[in-house]
Every structure is written in C-alpha cells, then in structure tokens.
Length: 279
Image (tube, rainbow, N blue to C red):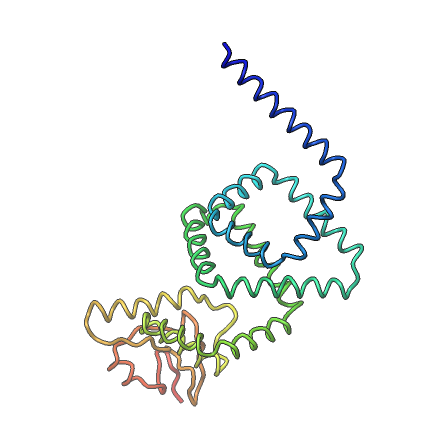
C-alpha cells in the first residue's frame, strides 16, 4: 500500500513540475525564442551538422513519418500550397519571381547532381510499377496521357528557345558522359544501330513523312535481326523505292521497307524496283 502512495506522489510531483515548466515558458516565451534564434545564428555549422547526422541515422523513420503525415493531411497540404502560390503571384514582383525560380532551379540541379544514380534507379522502379499496375487500354489513363502530352507540347512551343539553349549547354558540359553512354548503348544493341543510321540518312534527305509509324519500322528492323539469328546469314532492311534515284525518290516509311538478304539487296541497287515503269 505504501508503495502505491509513493508512486502516486512521484506522479503528482512530475505533473506539478511539468505544469510549472509550461507556465514559465508561457511567461518568458518571447525571450526564450529570441535566445534560440540567436544561438542558432551563432552556431549554424553545428546545427547543420547535427541535423544532417540525425537525418542520416533516421532516414527511413523520417521518410515513413513524412509519407504518413502527407497521406493523413493531403487535402490541407494541397490547399496550403495553392494558397501560397496564389499569394506569391499577387504580392511578389517580377524580379522576385525570377530570383525565386532561379533559386529553386539551382537547388534542384545540385540535388540531381548529388543523387544522380539514386534518382535514375527510382525512375526505373517507378516506370516498372506503372507498367505492372496501369492498364494502357483504360480510357481514363489514355485521356490523362493525352492531356499530359498536349500540355508538354504547348509548354515546349512557348519555351522552345530556352529548351534548346539548355540542351546545347548540357551537351557541351557532358560531352564525355554522353559519348560513353552512346557507346555503351551501341555495344549492348549493335544491330539496332541500323535503325538509327537509316533514320539519320533519311532525315538528311528529308524522306521521313509526318504520318510514319515508327513502331512498325522498329518492328521491321527487329525482324531482320531475328532472321539473322535464325538463319545464320545477314539481312538488310531495304527501301523498295530507293531514297535516292535518278528517276524517283522514295520515303522512309513502313510501306516502303522490305527485308532482303545481302546478295539480293546488293544486286538490286537503286536502279530498279517492283512495278517500275519503263522509258
């Protein structure tokens, strides 16, 4: 019985101490907050290193808590973001808007450079999940993809010069990386390189119409590779009506492609084709 009384007294003392601390904080709240701000300003490096260490040690726990919080308060968070964006649009000047966008762009760029491999891996996983979970024949999914495509096309038209400029700058800064990636792709897909080279030649000759079905063309080139692996001899994807000829120039499209053996293609040349008229 005496033990229970002692425990009860301990609990009461803790509650009184907690209440006293709360009242004291309310009385001196402004001074406490001011002291905290001053201390953090004077010890920025220490605060940053401590926070970074904590985040690294508790990464999974923080991510799970954030996801849970977002799931429970999704509507409130979305409404707050929209309200803040509207408030910024109404209050900030054009110069402030540009500075804010540049700041966000710079932070995003730094993050992508630091976490490049992780971001690529997450993108691959997300794409795989979408392929497994989303049925492409779903009307809602098709409508959503069409709306996204339309939005991106309109955005690209409005910002074409900026996009081209960024692409040029990226290629200039990452020449070696792009070269290595291209070589690796060609090494992994040596025979599909034919399709790229054929399209490049056709573009130079302006022989690709807008209505071309690129999926069918890719399938034809894949079939040529299949024939090579099956029959153990080389095959060419040939233009029935040649792209360049003294008489007429054909198009690089699915209806103008056929699969021939090397001997058949070389004997044909660009001087004749089926249903060719005679002079």
